[in-house]
Structures are given as structure tokens and as C-alpha cells.
Image 1: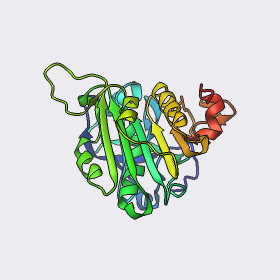
Image 2: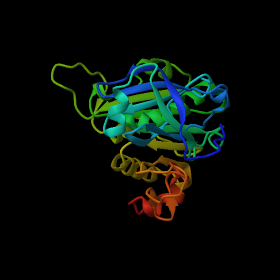
Image 3: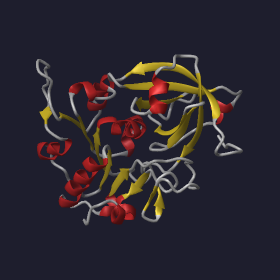
Length: 280
């Protein structure tokens, strides 16, 4: 959808709410105007600016399956004024949405190659469109490895999709949590997500690496990739910064010479490593 004014939000209706965890909800939305939803499309990794009128605006990554044309999803953790206000809304309520903005995961560049995807916590939400697209076009890609970690089992997103992801041909899906609450059963790994690297074989040849999660986590993940022979050109990361305009006008999200909203949020590590706090 081409907006005449990129800073003006369009009305969108909450069609459904799905509780993912105790503090995170997936909102299914559709634009209210005639034909506007049909004109809307996005690429995996992009985001919208979500407006709660009278409260504020926040950048939220898109988390929906690309094949879903009649609506789009945002998976949101209630952590601030906008997201807490959003959590109080119900189906049928109207919010403002503008976008999509930003760069995307390397859908085309990764075709014919193996994939390793490492995510932490809510960082799985921006990766979900890429993952579902890969599995819907499984023959276009080689081996798929997904390493996903969270603080506790109760913080894991999209748990009802794990089995279908893991059942795909030539796919390895590993889980880890930082800790297990007393009395809760857990049959997977315990430790930060990078401990999963020792649980599998990671082959850098003809492999594209993607990671999204807390920035400190991604720094350790990138270090693991580099130490295993990945080049900076093979690694893609998604950054979060305080974005205000979404179109590279305000400068709030600048990192080095780049704007996260316009040049990112997905970056090839080669292009961002000088501003990412690592020397590798």
C-alpha cells in the first residue's frame, strides 16, 4: 500500500487477539478502508509504526505468514505506554498503522543455501514470516537449523507451531531456556541460547545465518558464527532502536552512519559491524 503521507497512520481494526505468553499477545489486524488491505504487503523482517491515538506510536515488527492476504499480525510484549494500552484493547477496536518500513531478511539471497536461525525471546516474532516462508517453499532451501531460547518455558512464543516446524524435511529445531521454574517439567536444554551451538554441527559452507533477539545475545551469537568460519557477508541481524518517524527523517535511530528504520532493521553484518560493539 502506497501511503500519500508516510507519516499519517491509517485506521486498522483488531480482528483477533491470541495470547502467546503471560505478557505477549499476537494481534491480527486489517485496514478499515475499502480495498486498503488488498493493497498492503510486506517482506519478512519489516515493521509497521503502530499508533494508539492520544497515547503514542511504536515500531512493531510484522510476525504474520506472508501468504495471509486478508490481515497481518503483530506480536507485542506489553512493556511501555503504547504496548500496555494496546493490551487493554479488544477485538473490533481501531488503532492506527503506517508502513511497512525497513529492510528485510535475505529471502532471495538465501535460496539454494542452508540456513541457521538463532533467536531469543520475542526476537522470534520478526523471524516468523521468514521461517514460515521457507517452509512453504521448502525445496528452495537446504538444511534448516533453528536455535531458539527464552528466559523460561513460559516465555517461548508460537509454541503451537514448533512441532510442524520440526517435522519439516532436513530441519533441526533446538530449544533452550535460561532457567526452569520449580516444579515445571522441561526436556530440552537449559542455558543461554548460545549453549545450543555445542549441541549441533554448524557448517558455514553455503550457509546463511540469521539472528534476532536482545542485542547482547546477538553479539555472542555473531561471535559464535565468526568463530565457526562464517564471514560477515553470511550473517544477518535485526536491530532495535528508538524509532520515531520510521522513514529516516528524525535521526533518533541512527547507529553510526546508518538509520535503523530506513537502512535496517535487518542488516548484513558486514555493513554494521563497525557500530555493533564487536571487533570481529
